[in-house]
Amino acid sequence: MRSRTPDRLCAEAVDLARAAAEEVATPGMVGEHIDAIAEADRVVTHLFACKEPGYRGWRWAVTVTRASRAKVITLDESVLLPGTDALLAPEWVPWSERLRPGDMGPGDLLPTEADDLRLEPGFSGEDAPPPNSPVAEGMAADIADTEEADIVPGSPAIQPAPARGSIAAAAGELGMCRARVLSRYGLHAAADRWEDSFGPKTPMAQAAPATCVSCGFLTPMAGSLRQAFGVCANEFSPADGRVVSLSYGCGAHSEAAVMPKPPKPAEPVLDETVVEPVSIRPVADGGSVEDAGPAEELGHS
Image 1 (cartoon, rainbow, N blue to C red):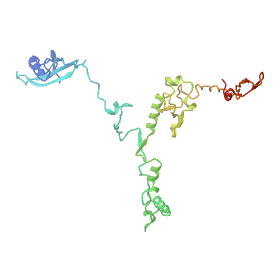
Image 2: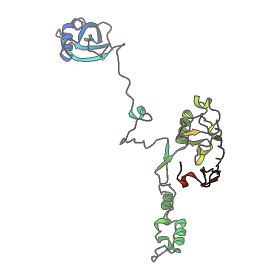
Image 3: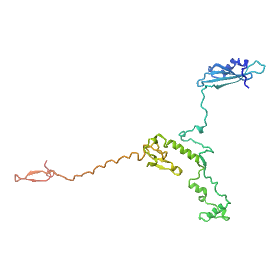
Image 4: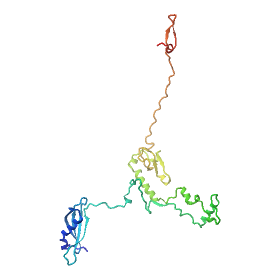
């Protein structure tokens, strides 16, 4: 139990405590004596101000003690401790909680926990019937009747099944051979995240002339998400290539402001009337003129 009154001899050992603090601190970084705190019977901790840059409010704590009925003071430990108004580093947070969208770069690997709530086990082949079960015997008999089966002597139950006829192969062709798939919790978490980013409550959607459900640039999604989300395919939209709520909208809506067609120019008029210049010259008999044809042909200017 901590004593209320510090031991007198231990409390008077300020110089011993200061010398111990100066041994572990940078020269000149031990400040004035602040207090002497009783830790136990004949155990006292001396506190000195710390002058280290960046350690505002920290204190050098030097603990001294003495044996019962002894007058020699001995040193226990010297350590730097934060005070009540000390400047402390933020509390350590695991990397999995510090990670934010966009932090990953090329070559980075993001491991997922085995019990990640966003995922659930996918197809593993464990649901295949046991080899000696009636279901397996029936499957083997059906496979033996096909041309692709390799018939071996013995019971139909031991007939080898071709790889392409197995459940695992069929699941692989359908894209179902994933070790884990999105769980219901992961699906709802993604939907909430997309709704916050590109949903009806965003400022862009509040000022939009119409929603995405009537936009020609909306690309529908597959599965259950089709009922609430789609992908924007308008390069001028702020949501281009993003999953958007059907209730989202922006000014790039396909029917927001349909531009009128440009006026069609009139058909060109082709004037095919040709007037050729002619040259008139007097005839040799004197007085009369005649049309002698184009001046170019007569060589007159």
